[in-house]
Length: 98
Image (cartoon, rainbow, N blue to C red; front, side):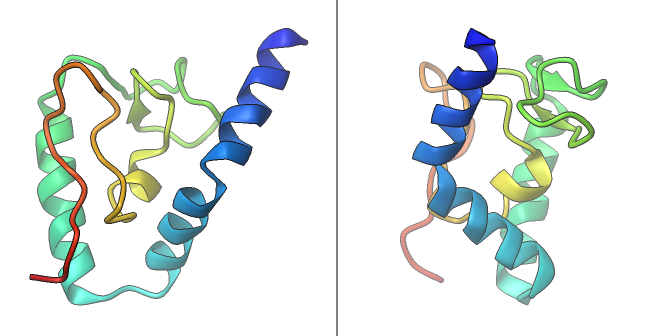
């Protein structure tokens, strides 16, 4: 029960990032898809990628980040999000379209 409450708190804290990732996943823009593809390529070689979904915050959303539990399909499409590995980030937030 404590774990579920913790997940709910994390999701609520990051709701705008999640919604932006969902929005960009539905309404695709070429430059966002390009950045997402670059990020996903980096994530594919990360030792923390979770392909099975055991570390995903939401079941069935794999592949996800093993560090933060975010779905990579959404996280990589939110340009204001950075890599889930805070100590050793592999990619950073994008501030502008350029």
